[in-house]
Length: 515
Image 1 (cartoon, rainbow, N blue to C red):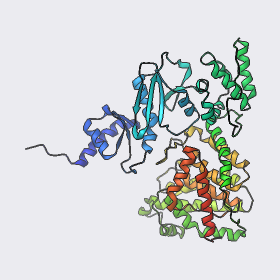
Image 2: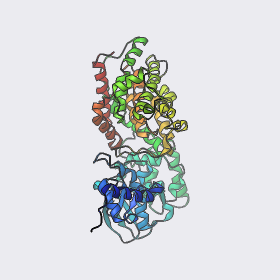
Image 3: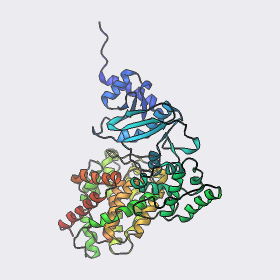
């Protein structure tokens, strides 16, 4: 008699057990040799693994949409770190341009990454979904003092990347260069690299002078001329006017948020809706918001993939939901709805303050955004699914956005990003600009473990209230264009579709005549 065939579900259980053994240290990248061939084939067939390229794999979600590339982006730099170090030890470095992008916190994985090695290898490595590595060799090893590890990968230090860039990058990557320049506090960090690329140093002296850091430029030049170097400073290497002067030494995310706000401002203003502004009395204004509370909750939660219904929301709003019921305690969607309604009540009061000009939308956002977030998840705390301390402050781990090429910044930089956002909002006079930009940039920074989209829509409506615009709902039926517009702003630096989307949503709310 032949050997009995093992049922498919038992094969999968065995393969998942093997994967769990490997993945005990939270590895998201698996080398083929770590799994037996049968287990690897089962995991690939069922969607628990996908292939970077033959021999290297990443964990995936078999329940995700077929085209969702989130797991690839989430595990990309872990793969890059392991693959390059296993193959080349410490004898590699990302190119100056790629290093610049990492230091500038460009959190989008480029279609091709260039890697320099000091051995005889010139090769293109094709990866998942048309991404690739281009590896090329150089004659001499890269000195260790020029390298730095970022995101687990060896790249040039910030100063070295700037010095080694070619002149063309001052046109094609001008914003990123300015952001990285702004990170460097010590002019000697640039001066020490003069023997590696004197022209690069001369170009940077001119660049620092052009952005307004004249003392910094003079300090580099004085140090080198005192030592006998003949430096011919390159005048105005940037051929475009600066978007915003970055004269204060700050973290890259702080500078990026400042730059994005100013870069996008005119495009947002151009999309400003032309509608009559509200002139309701306070009681009428509050009643108008209360009247759409259930509708707002349904759409905002549904956008986040919660399976809620207006009936469920109304049941909770009417006090008919029983938090002591075991069934209800375990109902994630019900807790999300309850938290949303309680947070909505806080935001409604903040919107009223903004509408009455008691405080600006920016001041209310700064004071209250953490309260809004915490209230969203208090039912989960009460049900024992979250700890109260989980709601303190901001996220303390990396996050990845489903279906997006944008990877939110490292949690260590969140406060820098929020500082810049708060300063921009306080300085901005136009309520529509504040509404669009707080929504976009709060999602870009992604400060919370969850609830960023809901908090961003709350903040948007508080800013709109200051300008006497109607409370605006983003309908779940428009989820796809909404997400696509956010993606264009994050990845392509194009805010126009998102600004127009919000403008159109405001007009729809006004045209419904609820005000």
